[in-house]
Image (tube, rainbow over the protein chains, first blue to last red):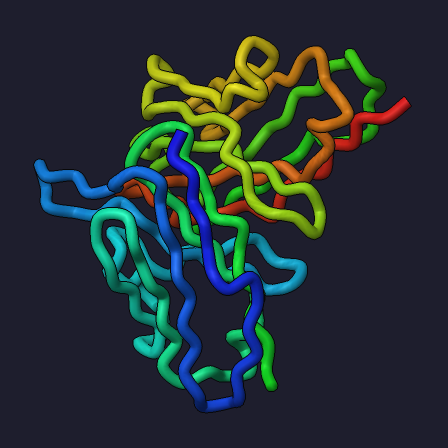
Length: 113
Length: 117
């Protein structure tokens, strides 16, 4: 199984500042047939189900604000929130959607400083 | 608007069974791969099972293989999870999820399963 790790476990950022979350997979999630990295990012606000933010490592889901961006390839990925807003307080998960079992990272909790 | 509404959760004794249902609307259910993902309250996300569009391909997490069965009825736009031989460690909120390009793009609110004597 592909093991997903995330860092940091939590971070506090001032409103308007940048937040950066890292994710590493134990195996490459790059699919050469379509030149895509099968890595997704989700946001889970308190009391809500997860919401897809980014798929294929850097493609923003429809309706997701452009302050959210994803980057990386192979085994190392990053989610960046360019200017943190109050509504971004949540837990963020990375997930490989390359092969079964579709494993998630342990999550990173983002709070306001 | 995409809606996924789970039902069927509850309190069950160890060794017991439950059948979860997920009623889908707002999209073409028969064209979508579907999944179950569970979450222990306050903890992380664990993928449980998936099923292809016509129900001919299924896969499971090792922790539930041989005990859980996923199925679907495209005429009713409904996804199911039959859960047998339940254990305490199966206690969780179970989400019904639609996928596109492999990513999980729509989630239900979940139904809570508690396995306890």
